[in-house]
Length: 543
Ligand code: HEM
Image: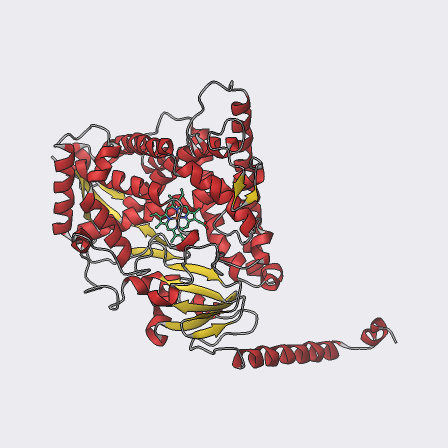
């Protein structure tokens, strides 16, 4: 008898009973597997299909709150189910193997293959989410070559100076006129300005093209408009909004079961919208790459090219490349990058380079407002280096002198890390944190708790940049992981520090900020990184 004949004889109640039986079998099997899992650790009880997603939603989809609450409840070692079983580690010594800087490491990837990331076009591409080691090595080689070149660093300083001048022109016009100050209307949202600032810097450094998101924000603040054509400004705004929503949507594609994303109305709507948004972004970045390729092809070989990242990765392993690379990790890689590879390198730069830096600067502004002694020392250092010159551009030589600013940046990230968690995926059986784990185990390193652990930090709750100024001070191994560790360590860390130090020095050389609400805690939305949603300050000139 065929299946068709069996089912055609059944009524609706039979179907419902059949589905009910299937569900009971599934749930029984799910919890059987859960209660007989290897190395059961404490952690919130997961639910079939959704794991700990309901609890995550209960904590307002905030990774800071969610992991913070369970850290308090279960301690340094526990597990959660978000997409897959994750082992949460909060002791620096347990992360030794995960962050080992060696190609022999079993933890060279952050994630396994994930269907959701494939669906949104991010799996096995670029660096951040790339689980394919051959492709990752190839991309990382050219990413690093481009971003660490001295000419790129120089360009980063020039661009930071240039964009700062633009931002301060907007501030002068909006907030620093006498009548505005008199009316107490010199209030700005630092978080919004800085996210646009870093965006415009990163887009320029990455693509060699301008974006106008600061201009767009200026246009939104009042009657006065910038001279930039409105269509170009709107285009930039749309691009950035789209990038942000793409970044936000990745969590759903990573953690939410495909069945839910494809068939449950709320999630399906969100998922379809995210896919449309990703297509818009990919087309946009592809057209930038195409334009640049044509420009490079039309430039004679003996003429110099600009130092932006896009030019560098397009020309990598071509006759234009002075570092012509024949092998990467012993494998022959003597080919240039494809447009698809370049697209995702660009993407990683936008994702890795904008919100991280912008949010950390916002956190710094918040901490300096709460710690006037620290701010005073920052300002003293700035005045010493600039010799009270309030207008000259900042130089590479200046940057090396800002030791205290460097300490403040690290201390702010210690007490309030931008990147809350590091992820590693084990590709071989191994012993971690005293347990033997099978291949395929996901580990998550909790930067928030490691940075605040009494085991590694003296007086960890106290915000004290001076701890970094003590001669010969080095944090204990893996106890400060602002930029991660091992071979997947942040390749943008040099650029990040250039931008952070330069921007802090430029801002506090001329301006001072008071928080509008000294009592309010930092307002953050916490996903893969912690993002400052708003930071209202009163700005004044330092005269
Ligand atoms: C304050 C600024 C920044 C912070 C706190 C930060 C932090 C991090 C962290 C924690 C990681 C993970 C490392 C690991 O898993 O071990 C990472 C990876 C990465 N970051 Fe950054 N980052 C910053 C700025 C930047 C900038 C400016 C760029 C590029 C322009 C960038 C690009 C990347 C990329 C591409 C990766 C992935 C590396 C790989 O998988 O090989 N980051 N970053």
